[in-house]
Image (cartoon, rainbow, N blue to C red):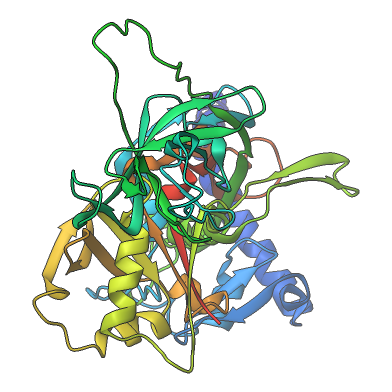
Length: 473
């Protein structure tokens, strides 16, 4: 009897050790039994009240408002949770994110704050216009004072003493002062006084009566081009030149995306291989797509969230930062002449790069594709830059890398585009792109695997005049 009692004690101890060793398995089995019982008692669309299933752009389905569970999966995709099949899911990508891609390849600067202050250094203007007519004197009234005149321009500040000025469209004279020269008239700046009055004399002026070197008639609106300075032999100094940067400000935005998958969803057999990694890949793409729209068309603002009782920082889009506009008419559309004008405006007057990027909607890209190109403007085969395939559009002014962006179409700007100088596109990152695993099981929140994707960043266009918007009237 004692032996039987001893054996019973040993069996009880062995059972206790087995239960202790397999506690997790027993709890899981108990949870399954409870779920099956509850599922039979409450066979309703309870989960449908908590979650929202949204149809995708190409027939797929997306779940919001609740973690992806087996019940939700069976409702959204009934054939998914079956036996394993060696099959690859085709991940549909409705559009690319060239701005985000370009900014990542170009590199970024660390921002120590959510508010980024930066400075732009512009170039000094090189041209002005005649503000009013200047009429040369008659032969009877000409005096020596007519060799040095007050030059009325709309921007006297860009000229200094010893500058030379090319008068566009007005021919100068040969050394005899009578014969019209093929060269355009050149003026020399004698002085610019405290009242900002500009006095000049002619380099290849006209002889009027007995007075040589007179300044001939210059009409209002004539373009005056600032050229190099001309010093004398004894000049040691020159009028000073300083460039002061202009301060600008941008806000970083906190971009987030959270992916969750329940434990049972992970363990269930599926017809195709669809793991947490696949979900994270889809989430990253959707996150980048949203960032692309914010980087392009976002509005810089700081708003107050009454629910969370916190400030929300919104970044400003580079569309609003570009310093120039090219406007084309829907009636005249784009042709060879307008493309030349577009290239000229994009590459001149800004000291930017000779290789820039044109990103536009389907309407604009379609118009460009319909053109018959020649030796002046020609399109080449696809080239790969920054991990993106572009079509190259070349001219005497420079080269454009052309790419369709469906983000413009989604934002109602299919006929518009933007030309970006990649040398002056700068990304500031306060918090680099990262994926953080949340342990919601240990915290008692939900029995799920959870990952949060985060990046805090913004884009700025340094030197705005190097970038240009293309807008249809």
